[in-house]
Length: 284
Image (cartoon, rainbow, N blue to C red):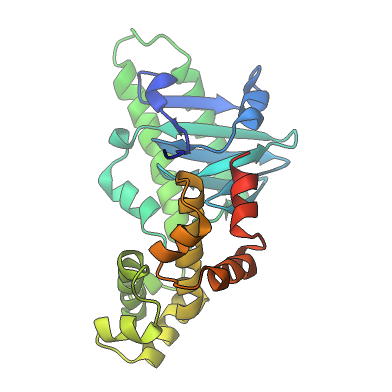
């Protein structure tokens, strides 16, 4: 019998494919902070206005300062939401309402997406757009052209988000050869990490030297190939610890480690918890 992370469905909150919320609305702050570990089946877009919030996303603690934006893609595990009495907009959007070219921007990050700091003019534009979207969202849905108007405003908001995150890449890395190598490496890593943990294997699959692969990956991400190998192993272990009732030995076997004691030491070194301690904390 498996334990699954609950999936919060957007349709349970709204049949329109869109929810616009703000922490200042009655009960909103308390409802957010009561949420336990979960995933959403939709995108979530955040605009932090004041204070500094935080949350844990895919086992990484994310600080959310004022004048920053941030987003979550469907399926990302998140919990431990703290508003710290700050104010923020949070907008949940059905995937079907997001054009593919914008989804490509949101989903192609090699690293976990980070909060993005807005300059003052951009922040004011986001604020105005969010206020207009909220005003229309709470209006009469039977009014003529309601859907067209709100989808137009939503498209503007999402386009601003995508543009901001594209600006974050000011070095042109995405069009470079090293970026393409790193992207292919990350794809291979997801598919093969349970069986293959040697940097040389991935270099051979990409028909390049191990040294060049390491230079490319480190140049784009800031971390070595070995770091990403261990990161993917530990992330998969965490998912198995949460999603299943497999014991540590069984998880070690699935991840290609014959010595589960060594695997436990490796897990603790990488995450600061023993596997059993991690499971206890995240499933309590």
